[in-house]
Structures are given as C-alpha cells and as structure tokens.
Image (tube, rainbow, N blue to C red):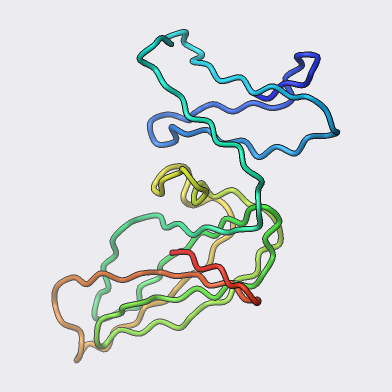
Length: 175
C-alpha cells in the first residue's frame, strides 16, 4: 500500500493467486511530499524467514507482448492465427511492428503493425514479472497469420520467436 503523510491509503495491490505472485503498483504522487510504502502479509504469517523485495523506479514508456499459449500447431490445410496481446506502459504510443522470427521452410507470416492508444494491462512484461500469469486475453491484441505450403512443411516442431519492434530513433525490441 502507498500512504500519504497523514496515513491515508492512496492505493494498494495484492497478489492474485498462484500465477500473479508479484503485485505491482504504478503510482504518480498527486503532489510533492512524504509518502510511505507498506508491505505486509495480510494473513499475518510474517517472520524472520519471510523476505520481501521492493523495487521503486521511474516508469518509462515501454511495451510488452504476451501469448495465450506457449506452443501452437500449424496444420497443412489451414492457416494458424496467433493472438499477440500488447501491453503499453508509461504512456507508450509509438507504432510497433510485430513479426515471427525463425519460421521453418515452407511457412510464412506477414508482419503486423500496431499503434497503442494509451496504457493497457494485459498481465505481462514489466521488470520482475514472468510471462504466463494473469489474463492473457485482456487488453489490445493483434493476430499473426501463419500459412504453410503443404508441399514444403516438414513434420515435427520448430522453435519460433515473436518479436515487436517500435519505430523511432531508439527502437525498443520485445519478444
């Protein structure tokens, strides 16, 4: 929780079950002054063997990508749609080109452009947080379409990487 100098709670966050163990608060102080951060176990199970890590850092414009699954199957007879969720943070608004890297022979996918309109929360991507948690279908998303040439597709799996690259002088690259 973040409290003002008088002890009033301004905002708070809690973990959301087993998948979301690292609560995160994006906080902008309403005015200059003193603020207090309080970290506690709401069940009262603290003690010398329990440790918490607190990171306080300025938020800079950024984005993160997440997927609903970590593996996909491309069938020879039909295209595969992969939904890519995009979470913009810190006022990030630059266009992003999302593409698939490392496609096997006979498989193609056209890059997709996405322009965030403001901050979003699709459950992923900030420092200290691991993918796979949260609601992976929340927030804005794009669809990558993978197509396979039935004559060229080989059986078996192949690792691919989905990459987003922002426009601008100093592009951000997220996978």
